[in-house]
Length: 88
Image (cartoon, rainbow, N blue to C red; front, top):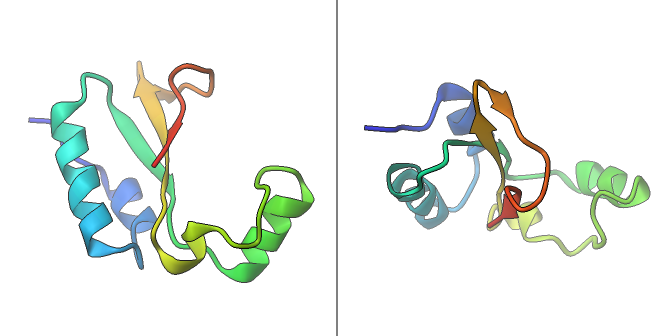
């Protein structure tokens, strides 16, 4: 049965427990493996992401632990191309 790896769990620290449960279920139900790349962010990290255009707001749900970023993991590598990128 598929399961989240340690890197994903490390990136889930501080994330809403209900969202963690959702991710744990998703890894079982999805046909595509994925990794959690980011969860809870500091305001300084969020400001940086806005400054480089990687985020559009300083009011991100990441600041409260209510958002995560995931990336599909195919053939032992991340795939950063649409339509395989999703943000929960």
